[in-house]
Amino acid sequence: MKDRLREDGKEFDWFDQPRNIALIIALLVVCCVLLFFADAFYHKHPHFEIENLFGFYGVYGFFVCVALVLIAKSLRKILMRDEEYYDSEDETHPTQSLSRHPHD
Image 1: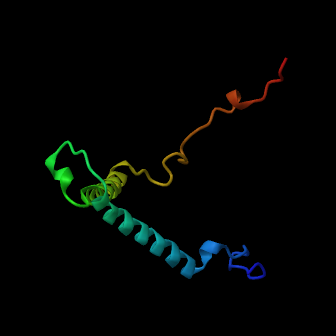
Image 2 (image 1 turned 60 degrees about the vertical axis):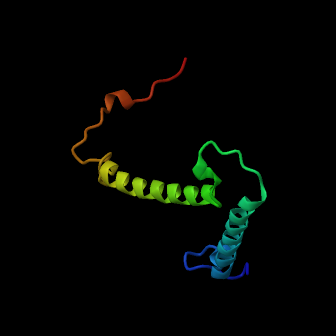
Image 3 (image 1 turned 90 degrees about the vertical axis):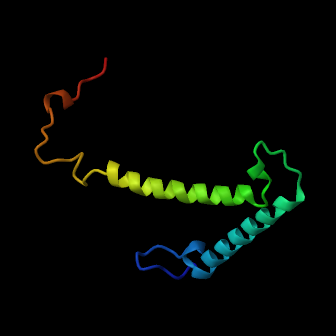
């Protein structure tokens, strides 16, 4: 595998193989499913009645994560600046204050 190069000249990495990515995703899904069903095997100490529902924390966490992504996407539209925001052509730089001074 070390003798094969990508189009940009770099060596292939373990993450460049689509089957390795599929393996990672499959392991992640299996881990999430196991943790979801593990909810049935421990005693809970809920503060609210809804916390007694099977898989509540997994479902709640999933929906909150999706909501965070959607909120971040909408916030990006509000907060995003143009590409030239910090490097405009009409900006002048003070050349006098940029000169070097010897240290004592």
